[in-house]
Each structure stands twice: as C-alpha cells, then as structure tokens.
Amino acid sequence: MDDAPANAPFIIRGMTAKGARFRPSDWADRLAGAFAVIDPNNRTNYSPYVQPTTLDGIRCVIVDKKLQAADPTAYRFLQAFASTNELLTENAD
Image (tube, rainbow, N blue to C red; front, top):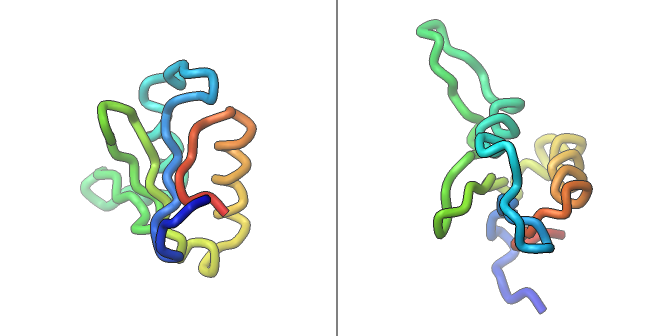
C-alpha cells in the first residue's frame, strides 16, 4: 500500500524489476529532454513537470503529478515508458 501524499511526484527509476540498471546511461536526460525547450543560448531548459535527477546513485525522472491535468497524453506516455521498460516506479497511479 502506498502511503505517499496525493501530490507526491511520480518517480521513474533507472532500475528494472529484475535489478539491472537501465541503459543507455543518459536515458533520464533523453526522456526529460523530450519535454524540454532549447533557449536562445542553446541551453536545455527542462519542463517543470519532467526533471532528470539522480537518487541514491540511480538515474531517475521526477514527474510532477500536475502534468496529468496539464497534458494527460504526456503523463500516460511516461507511465507507458516505465511499464514497457519494466522500470521501478514510485507513486505511480
């Protein structure tokens, strides 16, 4: 049973259900980059809803649950990505 608050972020961890690290190693940056914009100085500005990070030495993507209301299709895409690749998740719906 998940006791996380309803507004807790949906976290996709770069670890498979079988315990293997997900590859390529930059997968989180690539996935979050699909939701990013490039500014005039050629810098990547990640969406406030989809952020790459490292937690406990594992690359992860943090998804703000507000994305579910703002762009349900994008939210479902991220859920499907995690499921299809058998990645561990936290606070998933």
